[in-house]
Structures are given as structure tokens and as C-alpha cells.
Length: 404
Ligand code: CA
Image 1 (cartoon, rainbow, N blue to C red):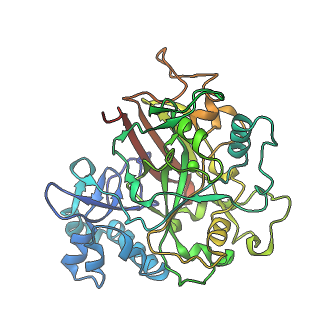
Image 2 (spheres, rainbow, N blue to C red):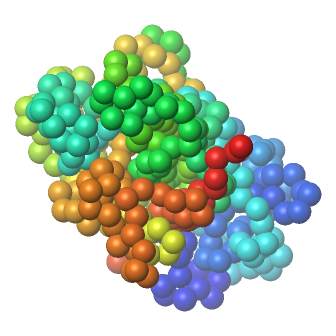
């Protein structure tokens, strides 16, 4: 397939070819493609051959590349593949391959708006039971629309960025007065993020059947959550400071095109959604993404994305049904990916059942919630063509103490 000598079990094989933004030392950041343990300096290759989109590939984010649209991005992906497959390209390309360990990855997109959904029935049901034990587990609207909220685009950070424990208000017990200090219930939310590559004018709604054309690619996303701050602040307007301190995404954006072999039917929806959220099997796609959550190197859960109730296409249709416009670089996330079994839950809130059943880390230590110094890594992969694998990479973050 490729002229690179890649081992069979190598991550980021020829089926994946994700885009990222990197720099070396004091160089300007630019667009690269990951292959195996190397990064193809796509900006340098494009400049060398005078590619018509060389300037777009020399940018410090993927936004201008994504804005070229799905047809042109498809052509560029085919060209990248040819660079790594055709032996005639080997001499020219080899000198522009860098060791992944020698580059510094940047935030790959300039995030325009950020929206977080709540699309896992198991997660919504678990959180309902924990936070509202006297009410039905699912809110009455949950099966009629993909619930979401607007998050903070400016605090989306790239994998590897330290996350400072947030400070805020919490209510120690129902009859107490609120207190202020570092969060004592800092948590993970294992999610999948979708990067929007096409803008729309104000007043335009994206149809479910067109949604794929607007989604450039997929990232892994950790929606860090301070449960104590969240529990005290979220009624009646929803998540705010318990979420907005940081959201981490993976450095490599996997084009949706790379996930064709992982596209599966959406689980049955009952009741049938309203017409603007309805569509055939092709439009209402689900993705067979296999995720793992590790704390300090120990895998504590393995959520499966394919069981999510709402399709990314329905999320995008719902997000724009009121005429809200899209911008290139918009990011929307799935919500915590949780399955029905405990070892597929996507947050410590659920895994430890709000701290009552701490998670074993394998070295004798346990976690109800995160401690300073903990390193959380979300990884993922998907079935690729010809029994291969598409690598979703990782999103990693280390918790550091609150600033004084
Ligand atoms: Ca979330």
C-alpha cells in the first residue's frame, strides 16, 4: 500500500491520514498529516511542488483548508494518499517526513462556536438518577430533541495542555451556605467532537440529509467537569463555570471520509422524531468508534460510540433549525459516551456513582474523582477498509493544582 515501512499494528496507517497543525522549534505552525510515527510536512510538500492550495496548507489552523469544501478536501486527501503510496514520490516526500516526537502539536482549528450535546441515553439516565433521584431519569424532552448547551470556544485546548483545578462555589450539604474553593469533584467526560468545515448564512437550516457535507472531521474530546460547581449552579440555565474552564481535544482531526467503513445504522428511535430530525439510514448515520479512558495509564472504561441515541446529523440539524448560522471551525460534541454496562460509562461521576463506589486503579489506589497530578488519556479507533483500523489518536491532559 504505502512505500513507508509501517508495521501491521502501526497506529495512523494509510487509512487514517488525519490533519493537524504542528511546528518545530521556532518555525511557523503549519498543516501536517500523521502517518505512523511520523508527520508529513504537507505545507512544505505543497510549497515545493507549487500546489494551488499551498498557502492554505501553510496556515496555523485547518480552518481555511476545511473551508475549501468537501469536494476539494476530498481531492486533497487523494493527493496526500498518492504521495504516500506512489513510489515515484518517495524521494521528494521522505525529506519532508518528521518524527512525531520532534514536533509540537498546536490546537488544530480556530474554534468558532462550541456546543455540547447530551446524546447518550445511558449517560442522561445515569446523571438523572444521580442528580435528580426523585424525578424520572430522562427529562421529558430528551427523546424528542438532542439536548445541548453552548460552551466556551475560547477555552478549548489541544491534547497535552495541563488543566488547572477550577475554583468556584459549591454547596456542601442541602441546608448549608455555599463555600468557595478548589473543586473537590473534578471529572472526565469522554466524548467525540465534530468539526464543522462549512459556513452557513443566518437564517439557513442544515437538513439532516446534507449534514455530512458540513462535518469536516472528528476529534476525541474531554469535557472536563467540576461536579460540585455544576450541581450548585446548573438550575435553571444549565452548565456554566463547572464546564467552561477547559475542554481538551485531540491534536489530529480525522476526516469523516476516513470513517466510511465505520458508518453504521443509528439505533432505533422511539418515539419517531419530528420530520426535521428524520431521515433515511444514510442520513442518520452512527459511527462505530471504540473508545478507552485511562487514568494514570490504567484503562478504567471502554465506551462504544455506536450506541449513541442521536446521530451527529440530527445534532447539526437541530443546532441550526432556528436559523442559527454556522461558522467554519464550529465544534459540536456528542455528550458523554456511556453504554449500559458500568465498564462502558464515560465519566467518573457514573463509574464511581457520585463517589460512593470509587474506581480501582490497579496499583492499590482508588479514585472517586480526579486528584492533582492525575493524567487522563482518551484514545479511540474505528474499523477501516480491508479489516484495517482507523486511529482516532488521543486526547491527554494532566490535572494541576488550582492557582493560589
Ligand atoms: Ca459534556
